[in-house]
Amino acid sequence: MGRRLESAGESFYMLFRAIKHQVDKGPVDAVTGKAKYTLNDNRLLREDVEYKTLTLNVATPATATGGGGVVTATQMVPAKVLDCDTITQVKEKLLEQTWKGTSYSQRPHIDSLLLEWRAGVAGHLILSDEDLTSVVQGSWKRLNTLQHYKVPDGATVALVPRNNKHHLHDSHDYMPGEKTPMLDDGDEGGVRLWHLVKASEESELPKHRRGSVRERGGERAKAIPEIYLTRLLSMKGTLQKFVDDLFTAILSTSRPVPLAVKYFFDLLDEQALQHNITDPETIHIWKTNSLPLRFWINILKNPQFIFDVQTSDHVDAVLSVIAQTFMDSCTIADHKLGRDSPINKLLYARDIPRYKQMVERYYADIRQTISASDQEMNSALAELSRNYAAEVNCLVALHELYKYINKYYDQTKVCVMDLKGAASSHHTYLHGGDPLTVPIDSLLPSHVTSPRLLTAARLQYRAGERQHGGGQRRVVTIRWSPATGYKPYEVVQACVPLTVKGDETTVSRVALLALVSVTAD
Image (cartoon, helix red, strand yellow):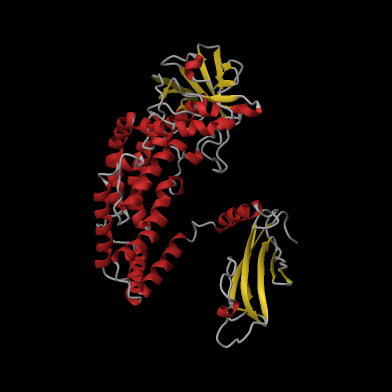
């Protein structure tokens, strides 16, 4: 899969950069996340916002070696922004353009920098999204923009460290929208923040009246996107080549097909033959669910999985439309589209038949290639293990698992499963979560003449124990004492089997994780 990902990686990165460049050319509402240029009509900024492009001169430090040693000078780097951008948006664009040769994780964090407008020797002004100059009208407060501060074209600005500290990214737990001011509930008396447009009229009404507005606005909501269809089509046309290049790279067999893909697709064909499944649509669905939908869609929706880049809501919205197009291209059934169909699907209605042919040809080409033996597959997996053994940090992965588990550790119950059925002695013959709808006798194996016990068992998974109750309560407590000698904050792991024996034996593997707080003696 590595070589396939490498061949498609360049095309995907070019698509990502094209989306980001095109979206940033127009206004993006910092509160709602809606943008003027997008493929997603749900994220389309429908209001006409007046704006103009500014070229700012960003003062950045530069070092040079002279006769007297190392000399620190100031270098001016031009950067394009919009006068309607909030200060946070300006900082993001300036970082993107002045640090474009540096990966995202190695750039200063946006919150560690302040934007300083410099006019003359002594004229330095710190700009921010909210300050004493912010415009407040009733319960609405508008986020500050360059237009608000009257920053002219060609102005000199600088990104200066906050409190004279230079912070780099420690981790990327940043969630899109997390740093963006969100609307407070007006019913609670809070101040509503807005950027380019205020919230819809529905949100301004009392809660008991909002439903009727939604019903009345239903027809209008369908009609409004048609007005902006030209803008969506223009965005699609700009990205068309990049989308075509990506789909071609993913679905091309011009390069050798990854051994794992060939091996697994052959396995699916063998299973279909073994079980007399002759419907080609079923086999097509199997392959689609295993590779395009399970792997590629996850990559297309999450570029940060393979690239060191910053994601955003408005870019994600465009990628979601492209990912949905790829999903539709992998299905055999024809989608009937009409006037009421989602505009996202209408945009690529003419392209999907061509993409479907590419998918079918890709599956057919893989079927024609030379089969991979078990020995070849095992050798390929062993080679992968050797090549990437030093690059995979198991402790980091375990720590992420621990953080997820620890988030739910204090909850009383993680999940509950009901087991209901007939039992003779200690044997359970049926389990499931739904109430019995058939006579008990019909559930018994032929060698059991009458049930001695009707069970309505309940399994509860709690932190540190697994319980089983069927008339009585059975508690299985696992006590674990990890070995000594671990470093502070190191993740310790173990995996133990939990076997429940009956006519059907169920074996559960219980993963135990612990985080060392101090060095064990």
